[in-house]
Length: 215
View 1 (spheres, one colour):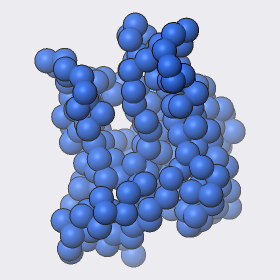
View 2: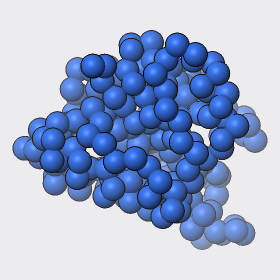
View 3: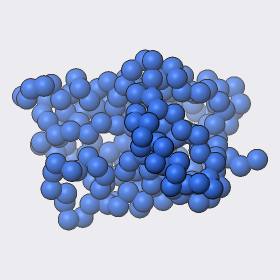
């Protein structure tokens, strides 16, 4: 039987590119995103692939509770909200708005899904972080603070999953071209989403662990 990967934030950017590369390599895919229309378009674009879609808002406890619990071969926690903003100024409060998905949603997803992998003593947890946690862009401090919190969660998961048979990887890409950049001028050296997705696929295929910077 082909391997099974769960991908959050699966209809845009890095998540969408991950769906493509895992489908090309004959993985079964559970694709999660907030918008049903986007998920329907994803299914239509991959008619021969084994893709199960679920519309769920992972910034809510109800959305997390809707995610099926299985002993996935790989879980890619990619879903995140991006917005410019600072910690000390700005209305609304960007950090509070971003926290619900970028940190709490991923925390709750790990609590829901990891016990099944622990029981099976197999699988791979891959978390999509940000290289921004290394240099803190001045106009993105609220966003980067949530990604730094996610990096802390990853370190905790890595410690708790040591010697369990579950591999853990934190991917830290540089700025990546996604829909999040629609209202900003992207830098000249911005990464293509499929380039980051290829690094994610290699990390899972080769069972690479730890923090991996992608530039």
